[in-house]
Image: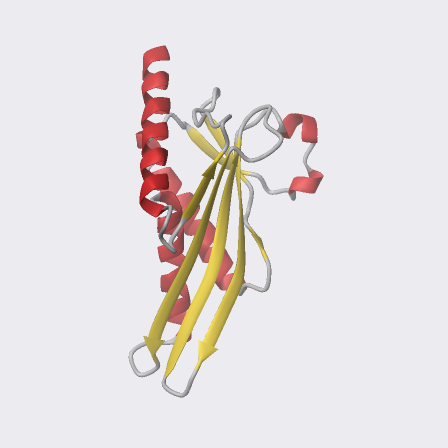
Length: 176
């Protein structure tokens, strides 16, 4: 198990370095990694905190979170993570001593804009994922994702495009 865990950690580190090099100058996802980053949880459990949101439609944020969780579970075999547990409480309601002994992911959605004209609409949103590891007060990995969509009214609806963009964002969060 020790060699497998070390191999997985090395693979994660190489993947993240490659992502940093590829996305460093792009306007796409932005990754910030702490020197303390160590992605393999000891108990093979990662907790998920429902994403906070600011002025984002509920159907958009619900779809992003649900799709993100589904994507994590579908890809569980590619990691050392055995289980993803969703924490139902707000972070402020969770015992801080317990939380610091866990690996967990939190997220935030904000900057949602619908810019509609007579014949087309542009959609934009921003998202952030934070990975917190055991005994680390600050996130050891932060990833930011801007997402945009554009559609013509005679080809689609706002509801369909909002859902499509939410699903695309959830996929990008797993594979930046």
